[in-house]
Length: 155
Length: 155
DNA sequence: TGACATTCCGTGTTATAACATCTATCGTCC
DNA sequence: GGACGATAGATGTTATAACACGGAATGTCA
Image (tube, rainbow over all chains, first blue to last red):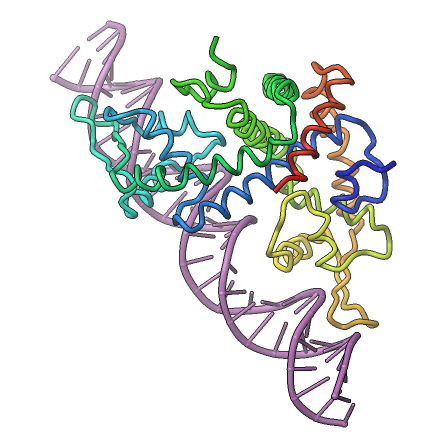
């Protein structure tokens, strides 16, 4: 029986190895989740990267974080954090201020508008999470998390 | 004990639910794998999307595929298949020809140069796959594939 | 056969990603 | 305190993604 993924991408031949299939499975699943996420966030006018930044800055509290620190905490590496924050500042989602103590740093903080976006979007995103993982037993979710962590460790 | 992912993205608070952690785990793992893939492909002058197209077209054989069919088979949805193939044609990785039977379709086929890229890059990519999944027992890989398939089914 | 919807591509436009390079600021060491 | 390297951002540039729209070819049905 051909695998589900094989059918999804209309691939004629079976995968040469379980690793090859697992590799593509991770990529395809992430692409679907990101797309789903983007759809949900669209009405709020933010991309999933921007949403991620908002969550990071909310977590940082009133102290805020400098650009480098935000970049470190992002799910996927973004080399161009300056302009990402530029855009978010132009949208009034964040506020920035040059750190008086170390003038190389620019501290970013989430704005009231940014907090509002998070507040409105979060319940809907929780539904997405719950829906996606509803079919999996808790033990399977735990195994999934562990397996993915192992994959990230290797290089 | 804080989870590994929590430490990776320097998140202060623990995840509110296993689903939330699993969700981000998939996204982060895929981002790392894609980045790794891009690094390996860079010397060959192709992006991972282009590499994906080459594999699809090789799988299609001499009959080739029209743009829509290529798009359907891609791991992640690409709305702009025309220009993706434009670029690959300009790089002489693929050849295109309007289908005489149905002149709406443009059939794309992999070129000798495209085949050559695949031939040279594939062994290195197999090493990446094997390395990443080497720490996982076969049974765990199987469970991972199944879990991801279940996540993709739900919406 | 002629209106009409549908399919598949191409194109215009904007936003973002990716990469390299440049500038300002700071720490260190003599 | 001045040279030096290191760090954080900013900026220029190119390539690509994302979205919307338009046009050609085809199928359908009266």
